[in-house]
Image (cartoon, rainbow, N blue to C red; front, side, top):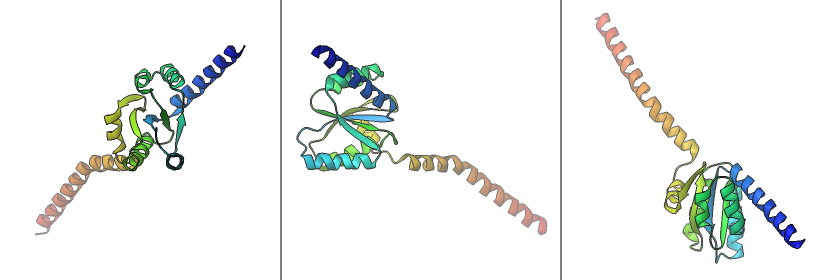
Length: 169
C-alpha cells in the first residue's frame, strides 16, 4: 500500500512539473550547491521580481516531466543538486537573472535551458542572457525597418523643394 501511495505521489509531481514546463516561456537548469540560505533567498527574490520561479526538484521527476513535454535533450543535464528556474513572462528573464547573480556568486553553475520550446546548452544560454530586453529589440527592428522609408521621404522632400525652386526662377 505504501508503494502505491509513493508511486501516485511521484506521478502527481511529474504532472505538476510537466505543466509548469509547458506553461513557462523558458526554463533554465542551474546547479546551486554551496549557496548559503541568505544567497538562496536573495536569488529567489530577484527571480520573483522578474516573473520567475526556482524549484528544487528530484532529478528523476524532472527527467520524466521533461520527457513528457518533449524536452528530452534537457534530461542529460539533470544530474546533481539542481534548481529549475521557470520564466512565465519574459523568455530571457531566467537566464538574465541567473547570469547576473552567478557573476557575484560562483557557486551557481548554469547547465542548460529551454527557451520558447528549443533546447540551448550552457554557452547558448549565456548568449541569450546578454540579449537586450524584448522591447529594445522590437524598437531596434522598427528603427531598421523605418530607416529606408525615412531616407526615401527625405529624398523626395529635397527633390520637391528643388523643383519648386527651379519653377519659381
